[in-house]
View 1 (cartoon, rainbow, N blue to C red):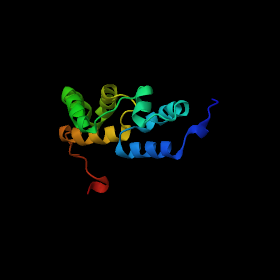
View 2: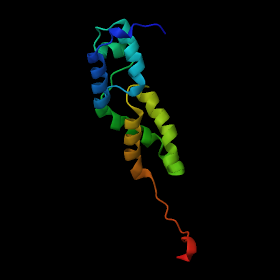
View 3: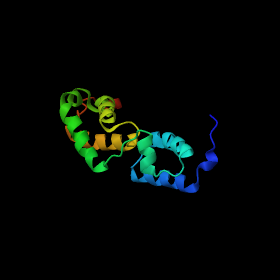
View 4: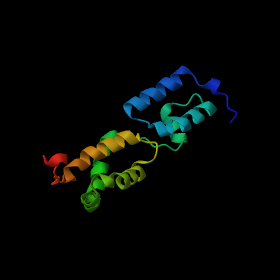
Length: 131
């Protein structure tokens, strides 16, 4: 791809890094935003996200959304335990949108909110050596 990346200035990168740190953009969105800025370097981060089709998201709503998805999938969680994480992450990503919130943040919040529903099974096996 032949693009003039020299149009990107330090403030573009520092804005992206701050957005990543604050959780206002996900790492999956970086390339799209940079492409928009190469074509329109004067856009704000919000305008670049909008043009790239990346919606803004209030992280305060995230716990509520994840809890709703957990509540709809209690049987799956009981049956599969932590194995339910993949399907639930898929549901969360569909609801929130790809590239809107970093997957690590989503996964961490999901694990935290899902943990009360996980039943731990005590092992009845004896340790090696019969001890």
